[in-house]
Image 1: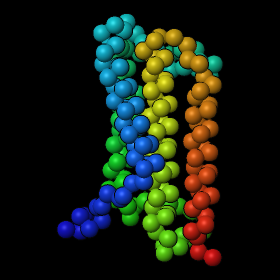
Image 2: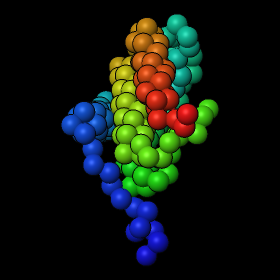
Image 3: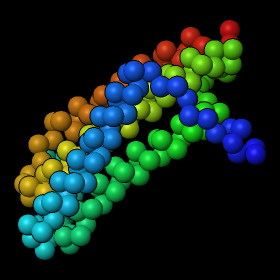
Length: 165
């Protein structure tokens, strides 16, 4: 009975639903593309790229499922976390004013959704170059990572208005 008291799927905003849908589409697209192209891959595929985007490690063909698996696990964890809204209390330097719990919860869900989307996008991007067996163009990786930092900064700034005075 106690577990059902804390389990409650929060009401998502339109923005959060769109981010969620895009994330799911990217996860599925990465998995489907990998499955379709698997038989056409050689026995050895790129495993790691250096900072310049050149392949610096190789692995067996079956390793191509690692990145899609990470994307799926990350997406699933985000969904599971949303079922436990009381666990979504973010860590902030100042204590949060729980009178604003609905707003705090929405900001926290949004930052989780944005970071999940950007991670899934990053995984899909890397997977593309693994499947193409070509050097990776690295500047989009830096942009995606930068967007994650910006998203976290903006959401934490917005959360600061809900701290105790």
